[in-house]
Amino acid sequence: GESVGLHLPTLSVQEGDNSIINCAYSNSASDYFIWYKQESGKGPQFIIDIRSNMDKRQGQRVTVLLNKTVKHLSLQIAATQPGDSAVYFCAEEDAGTYKYIFGTGTRLKVLA
Amino acid sequence: KAGVTQTPRYLIKTRGQQVTLSCSPISGHRSVSWYQQTPGQGLQFLFEYFSETQRNKGNFPGRFSGRQFSNSRSEMNVSTLELGDSALYLCASSFNPGVNTEAFFGQGTRLTVV
Image 1: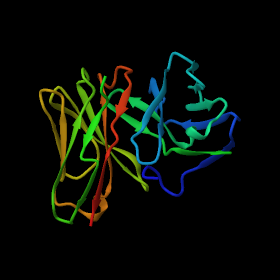
Image 2: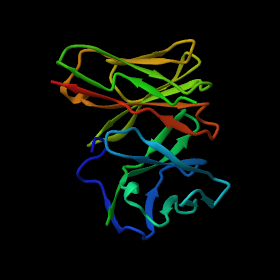
Image 3: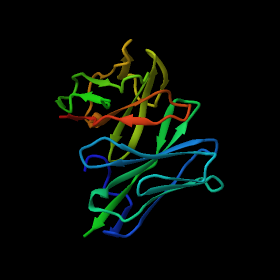
């Protein structure tokens, strides 16, 4: 696809299983985080966000967990479907600089 | 509500030329950010504009520039193109980064420099 390099970590899951994608962020002062999904040939698509005053937030089939102690985010996708195949990025908002800092991404492959 | 619109979707240019890319943000969003995406470097921040003012610039050479108009539409320009400028250029629209607001991306402009 257009978005990622060949060295991206890849997670392969069976259709119907749950997926967990992990991300480490860099700035302990960051207080807002977003998960994006990027399909081949498309721009990143907003999935879910979380603020630092929360540990967990749920959306439709997705849950984001935030562990501020170890600066770690995870995205859980329930009952993974073929349409979930994409590259997933976490992003932290750098409040002092008006930008988002992106992780390197994880490629999710859903096996039929 | 319309999403973020980037034009053109694809461009092929030769080394030494210049290029202008356009981004129309979501209605009501005053912030437009630009990112370069390459396989080797991932998503790298170029610059951010808010109400026609550049508030931050990433670590890119001066050949990369941008501007924002009063209707919040933004353009970025790359002069004296190099092969290494080949990338997907993404525009992100938000209400105001830094206040816990979502950023929404366009489909990107795929620039190929030959």
